[in-house]
Image (cartoon, rainbow, N blue to C red; front, side, top):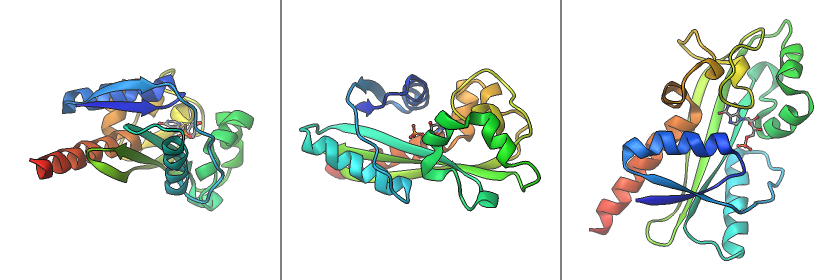
Length: 188
Ligand code: IMP
């Protein structure tokens, strides 16, 4: 099976290819842009992008929206994760968390739009904590400061297979493969 992934992030593309290939899914890059609306949830952002792309005539694609949520900051940066990364970055997040509880989690919402298998969304979640200084060179975004639960390495210190095993996106991919399989079997 082939899926067309809408993203402007090369790291995400590689993570999807790495995570879905062993599950029998090939990922192609669909080079289109979606204006990310400001909304309260990742799910709303994903639905709005799906509608926009369908309105532009696109049919078979997947896309995702992700964010890092810190309970001690009432869920911030959450849906504002991209803006916060562009403005204050990892160092700014570390300053904001000084003296606060460092628990955090990542969430990823994947939207699927398929003529054959229907439209649906799935989510994956990775609980963990934000460490006190950046560690590691791999990955992107908040990877150098986020350590998933039960691990002693940040996402940026993990190889991609290991990051996918623990990450919000990797978990959403497993759900995606399961759901696609069920829907394909239902068609037989
Ligand atoms: P996006 O809108 O899904 O691209 O993600 C919003 C922001 O969350 C990005 O700019 C990244 O900084 C951050 N982010 C999303 N996924 C990850 C991840 O897997 N690791 C680290 N940061 C991430």
